Amino acid sequence: MIGSMTYGQDTAQQWMKFELSFESDSLYANPLYDLEEFYAVFTAPSGKKHKINGFWDGGSNFKLRFMPNEAGEWRYETYCSDPKNLALHAQKGNFSCEKSASKHALHQKGNIIHIDGDYHLSYANGDPFFWLACTAWNGPLKSTEKEWDDYLSQRKQNNYSAIQFVATQWRGADVNSQLQKAYSGQGKIKVNPGFFQHLDKKVDKINEYGLVAAPVLLWALPKGEGKELSPGYALPQEEAIKLAKYMVARYGAHHVVWFLGGDGLYVSLFEQRWKNIGQAVFGEEHPGVVAQHPMGRSWIGDAYADEDWLDVVGYQSSHGIGSGTIDWINKGPMKKKWHKLPARPLINLEPCYEEIYFRTTDTHVRNASYWSLFATPVAGISYGANGIWPWIRKGEKILNHGSLSEESPSTWRESLNFPGSLQMGYLAEFIQQFKWWELKPDHELLTQQPGEQRSEHYVSLLRTDDYSTILVYTPLQTAIELRNPQNIDYKARWFNPVKNSYTEAELKSAGNLVQATPPAEGDWILILEK
Image (cartoon, rainbow, N blue to C red):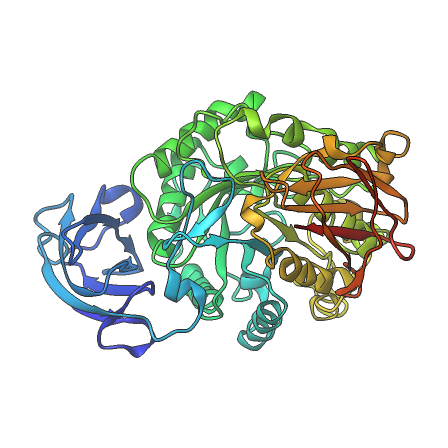
């Protein structure tokens, strides 16, 4: 038995990956099926116990990965469903865990959790965590080490906090850069440890930059070219469960938010299938927070209200820029239902991609993102660009995506500096100056709603419970009139989401009403503070 530490450390570091390696006495033809269980119980200095599943890493190699959440002396004992395999069964050991030397918030405040009753995510110490994710579905699969470093460095510098990616082959990438698949077979499957060893380095890097990894375990779109490549659609239920459990064991020691499915239909015909998968994979104690990433304009909040394994109600507003999509964001189920369902973060995990169909601009991206952020209690938003998610290099085209595959978009590197890509960083910086986790929508404060006449003119509003802070997003230069039920004497500013700048606001008061008009054309946020 060999104990090894990540990043070359002799002892474990709190809130970082700790790894143990084992060489099995027996060779199994297909460990996914032949070995029912291999896990360890880790006992913390406080006495609390954590059951952590291990995984096969090729040949006779097995591993256990764990993120210690306490400093001090830990001990562990392994269990194997093949008790004759003494190299895996009843192995005991201990190790020392020190405070992390990393200055990143993840390694100081702890892993991401959802606290019951909250509409946002938090660090383990209770501090709120704001979600700003970049969508790099193919990034870990296709990128070189230098490309991945460059990408993560730029995202971190621009206030992103999470990276969304696909963890297997799927319709957008049939193999990785090493021409490997995550698994083979459509009935009984076999995982390919080489594929995941390549992925390990990319996931490690995400956390090294202080970013949360958000892997899609089972891409699931049930239609279109390449759907047979997507495990969430193509695999039988039991095989999908085994594959997902394997990845949870492999990456559970990382800072992760799991996307159980990607782009799937999780209601109607497929609802019970996905509830079964979710319960089987995440029904017991598990590392990480769980979200679902549905197909465009599909709402799962009501159907999954009683599914305790689901922590985040994700949604995808789709890549439309017309009134149907705008109304779905501003007047749809998120706005109508959030306060009637169990408290969970509600996050638009896929608003319109910048440059998709060569028509979507930074204005469309900003509109969709701010509207989404203001439609429910604030939790976060995701960004995507049509050259980043498929990891396009010069001359390359997108795989299996119909008309999107006909013409090459801008490269991933060019797309990093798109206006909307940078402006989402401004959004994160802007909202985090406030106690954003206390902000909830209250459009009733508006005396008039321009969006009733034209969808693209919809004005959104957030406020704290005590009315001490009010934020109003307007997509155009138009007069705003608000009710002021507390008759508060507000200080007022305008925020320019394009230039990341502030301007004093001229506020007019009349009785319990206040009025303000943006200083120039374009979209603005009015800030009212007591």
